[in-house]
Length: 148
Image 1 (tube, rainbow, N blue to C red):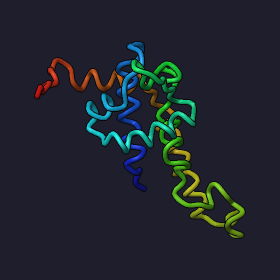
Image 2: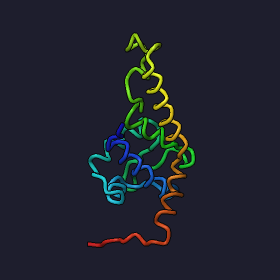
Image 3: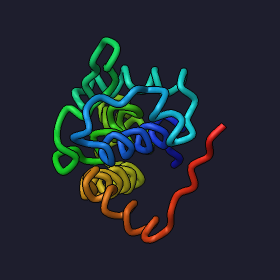
């Protein structure tokens, strides 16, 4: 199973918002530049994240995006679900009525366990955990800033 660019880029954008939490609204173009994501693509992701109640947008000259809750209160699983929907590897896990054999199907039980494992891992990580991990990864390294 592969996550799409929606989940990957959405996680990067949410990390950027978590890194800047408390600094006020961050413009989409700043998030896009910092995380190397297309601004147009990111705008679509922000709409989904806003609809899920994870991001709030502020209009106006000093507008932009902010996390709707503190980074410690937002799980990566919420981000992935908002952008991807269910992480079930097959449809019958979420909709047992779609297959008349689901109650006696051994692979069905395995697919359900796969989904549960993925959900458990994603829900064990908060945006705050990602911030801590990010800071450890960059450690004492200065991220180069290029000026044109």
